[in-house]
Length: 146
Image 1 (cartoon, rainbow, N blue to C red):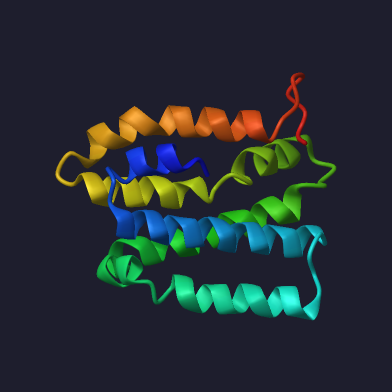
Image 2: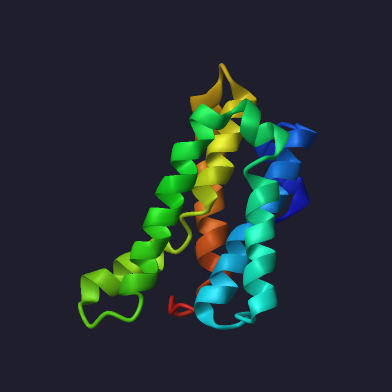
């Protein structure tokens, strides 16, 4: 994640930014394990250790009620995406391609928390940009997934 974009999303809140840095590393570690890019015992254990750090981070603990369900929803949605990414059913494969970016919902949730009471306005200023960047980074010029 681009530091300037994360800082803007978090309105400069250093604790929120640190939490999102760990979130990013964690979800990418899980993705690498699932994809088989990094699946040694050490890689798996490192991801487990990251989970301990992530879910005991001060920003997460302060906002537990707001962030716990987002984390569960992201995990569930990613599981569906992984299950359907190689599906022979066209709509499932297309759905999986869109929802493999579900981790960005945590970024938007954190941005919303940081902007309270102007949460919705702040989300609207970020969400389409984040979704566009996510799509562009994961697709070639013809729109095929990388």
